[in-house]
Image (tube, rainbow, N blue to C red; front, top):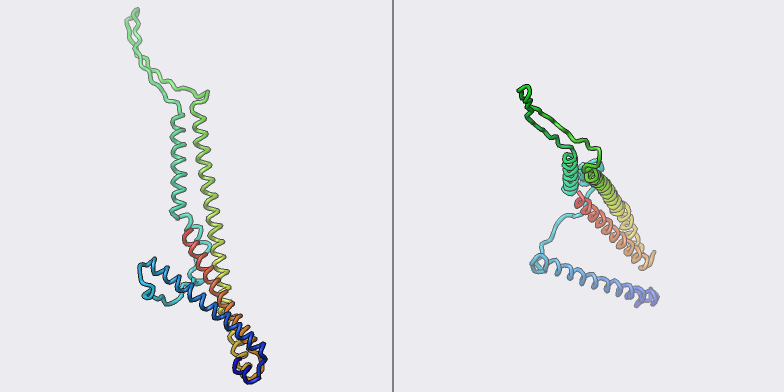
Length: 247
């Protein structure tokens, strides 16, 4: 734009707009470099390494649809999770305590043995008696009711917690799938069209059929699409991390 302005082929206002756009991009680039260096320094501090010798990772960290579990597997996985097993153990302990209270409420039989002697007839007899108290009145029934109520409450809480975990797991799975579908749409359909449009605009710019600002606008659109792609991949990655932590 500077050369075209000096040759008189471009108005000064277009040259000034291009210069301002270049300055804005340059400022953004410097801020991004500072953020990158700060993140590298923080990562190096956490790893106990120098910032300039951090290892580089090849490949991608974004999840793929084939690595996601099926909804039918989620409930079984949650049933076998240590968190749910701990809840079941608490329920079993409460049920055992209720059984102990119930056993203590059963009347205990008493056995009595006596010797009966008849002096007139000169005979002796042994009397044996077995007595069982009838629980006509409250015999620890209040404690038994409380123990049973506690067992039922714990069982209901466990079932509610399991249902909530299943709901959260399915929601996270759907969130991951939606984010991956968005990322696939952006990378497979939107970006190729934008790149083709950018190439066509650049060719038209050399031929004088378009303006530089239209090309810059297309570059800006590509940058926004790439940013949205990264955000979708990050959203899918974080949702999958939460899902695995839940399982």
